[in-house]
Image (cartoon, rainbow, N blue to C red; front, side):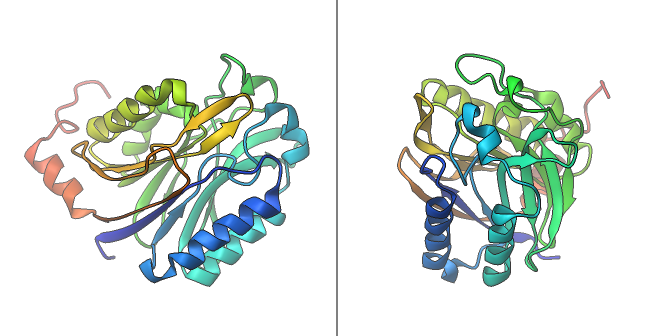
Amino acid sequence: MGQNVKILGIQLSPTMGDKIANMTKIASFLKNNADFMPDIVLLPEFFNTGLNPTKFEDYSEAIPAETTMFLAGMAETYKTNIIGTFIEKCPDGKLRNTCLVIDRTGKIVAKYHKIHLFSNCEINEDKFLESGKEIVAVQLDCAKIGLSICYDLRFPELYRNLVNENVQIITCLAAWPSQRVEHWTTLSKARAIENQCFFIAINQVGKTYGTTNAGNSAVISPWGEILASAGDEEGILKAEIDLNLIKKIRADFPVLKDRKIK
């Protein structure tokens, strides 16, 4: 297994409720950056519809359906792993905020249901969705990945449990608002530092459901350094990360080994 991994993040400003428009835009970003040949492509939370809790039922879809098929097609076309979230209508009839991982062949290899649902301010996600129950780590051909979504970022115990699963990269896909952008950046860096792994935070931009999303997507090293970032405009970020850095930092600065509480 190679130790260098190419990351492509798409910082999207979704058109509310228009799946075709959003998928078309993502397809264009991928086509225009095909020469980068990413190992992993990451899309923000609710990339296919934007965020509107009152429309979750309308936006929801089963797996597989149109969004799954789109992700699978893009993964297969560009020979890349793709990670993105949308509202899933589950077999039990409940709606869940689902992070789907598709491998280079177009196969679903992991599915994570968002554990921590936002119950604050104007969103009240918990009134519309069912919470997930389990952490999810998945071994891809290029790295072992831990999954998280937006509000999960505020709960460090989730990330510690993922590191206990020996993940090398943790992803957080979000629709995080501008009024708390400092929290977004600070907590993302903290999760990388405290767990000594790569942390990839991919956010929406633009207006959604009465607020403005912060953007500021980033690829962060195990030392807390921002290796690639995006501002507050729609676009992409690229990074090539070296997984050997994890071993070096953990050996030189053995915080995880020195833990006393298990």
